[in-house]
Image (cartoon, rainbow, N blue to C red; front, top):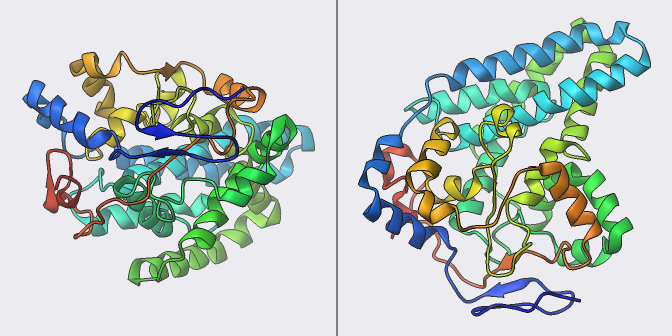
Length: 343
């Protein structure tokens, strides 16, 4: 039986939660800044981020060079335990770089994102940046926030078996859904991403062979499948408690995912690097402690599959939100978000 709807948020069988309110982060951001002006000290860049990115890239490419010599069992074990974790960490490094949190200059962040993209095989970084920033400024907007499942997707993958199949293939939906829901016009950096990745793969393939490429592809696929770190895809915005739209995770896997689990905190202040989000949570604990949060991404996946009250329709949608008037850029930011997001 469905949970009952809450005030200003309605849901019936086979529909999303529809909200009459603006996304929750706008108001909470203002309240936190008013209560804790020192939060502005957390804004800025993480000088260690570039070293973490380069380390992950070298790790994945290094394993890909030698993994073809291993038995099938070791190949699969390493791909699941090491490869998928590293690939997901690279997804989230690109997430940090989409908010320009490594360098002051946009171009430097973009080039580092292209390097982070190399072990992910497909030219993904710049299109992710476009769609992810849109997810922030149009959270829940029907037809704008491509993080939300399509209606046919939510109707087709129902029940425990349907949700299990969907969870096994999350990465495919995250890859192709944006193209179907909201195609974008390719611009300079999208083309640079494509050319850079093609050149990188052309150089890499003769050294690693197809076994190395297979390792990278399998690592990426598992990273968005039934893997503990993939729980963050579900944990962030799927409604387990009607009335709450975004959820944080405070478990140990934050250490290998750039603290992406601090998701309420991230949406409240997108230009605070992941490395400082625990400080934000501690500083403004009276705002975050009362919210439902998680300690296990694995349990989130299990609960999502097994709980009949939670499905792909368990997302908040809203009809209209103010669109941005400027591109996200640290030089155009105030109070931790792009200027267009503070209006």
